[in-house]
Length: 271
Image (cartoon, rainbow, N blue to C red; front, top):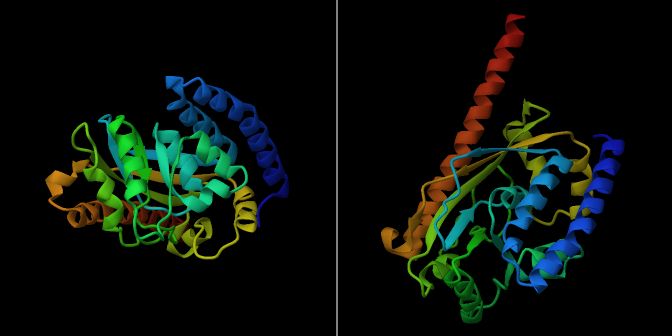
């Protein structure tokens, strides 16, 4: 499925572009330049073009700092998509740091690596709290894993504990939903959406190889109303608020594409 020529072209351009810009970000980090926060967004926006990702944004990321963006997680492509819209760093599982290339890219974007299997997470919370105290933007995947793209997994309230650890005041939390909706301008539909998701025990290489040859993929990213831990009353309620907003965003994107698909089917029937 897909074009081998397109795959090879995208891989060649992606690797050339990435290897060219990695030293730029590395030097910026060594020299402690302020532009290292926004430079990854420039990089990810061009990567979206190279990989055929067409991002449609609904709403706006809050300009308030510090902020924690809480999003559902579907694929490794989410990193490039969110990175193209948000000037911030990711909170990632510690295994990512050891991945070839992608681990290096995560470190260059100043990702915070956490071990979710460890019962005592005080040190990890302190590390994240330090970043929030510096009025930075962090991107969190509260499901703790990636899903099939058709549903939102329960948000883990424990991961929102960092929203109560800032020496500079309340941390703004903004829910963000992401949905993969179209392939080559045609609605994907519920049946085929899992083909774009990377979850469970799927090996990355064959999954990525298939995606690279599929043409252009449209993704809808919606920024929902922001809140704070104090406004929600507890971590559990904050997690529920974010989960509900993200679930409604995913459902709304799916319903919109289903409506388009039905309109196309009716048009064909008339013909």
